[in-house]
Length: 488
Image 1 (cartoon, rainbow, N blue to C red):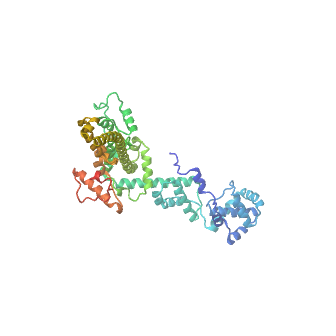
Image 2: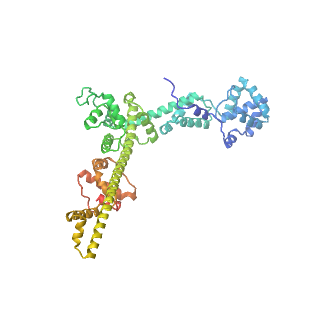
Image 3: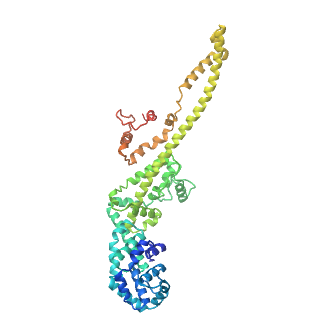
């Protein structure tokens, strides 16, 4: 099996890079009197420089500098200045030191003995893996685990192993942390819930001879086409046929298409299905959210067939994380659908009102011209002493005049101009899904919105009972004056 890679090349490089902050450089690489005394015991200038540089690398990043590795130029100059070697002599002195393998080995042993450093052992690997186990439950990022591992070894004055060994330990820690999460979640699931989760991956019906199948349509192509459109078919019959050829998991992750009452009802049905799985918060208690989100993302990117091949505990834990993520998505999508549907109803009501007001304006203009003409004839009749009724009949027949008066009165009783009065004409789609929406949405509110929440709970109770009359003591302070005629 190939080694699991949990660190990028940049992350590996950062683990062993020298500090760039001046404060850190001074802290790790300034030699005190005791250091200088020990260094001066070395016989040659090259030996003193090599010993001092190795001491600095022991301290940070915590490694042995091999003979074929060139120390950082600024560090070489910084150490040379402290031990009395000129910068121009530092390069040749290090090259001379690097060529003497026996001297370097002797210095490594001396440094370990004098400063309490030790080489990394298998026992250290086992212990550090145990120490990092709690961290693996909080983060699955390799660089986080590796950073904690390196810091722990530095604090204990244990020289760092190779980067390959560090990555292997991190991969082991991350894998064991994931297994512990899988085990914790799966053990918290009851047998009925496990059965329901496993059923997410099973197609309810796969009989190709189903008589309900639409004619001249291939089952797979139709199912995929309807999924891409966000709907399960143009009719309930087609929707039922297509749904039987999808896994419940595939059906649950179908996004909504157009903002219609039918799409809302489909999504409410999905949410009820998820709520029927009865996944309580206690199942994932103590597991950080981003670990669950990562599991959900990985699961949602897999097919049902691939999910079914996972080890049982991992499969159940992944499905649990996926369902929690799907539930959150459904809630967001339902709220967004509701906003879009209400927005469309408001837009249509405003458009209808604007059209009516435009027509009313034309009627008012015609009526104004007509009654202006009638008025002028009445004035002439008064001045001449003639019959005013005859004057009116010169403009139009009396029966037509009566009709125009009735039309003018009706025109005066038309809408006040507020488009909300037209909203009831577009309430049909809202009424189709409103009871189901209120029944399935878990709602909470801040103290400032307590009356609003009480009002919603009252509407939910009325919908469940099939009642329509709002009680006289209903909380209405949250209803704006403009909306009260519509609410009541």
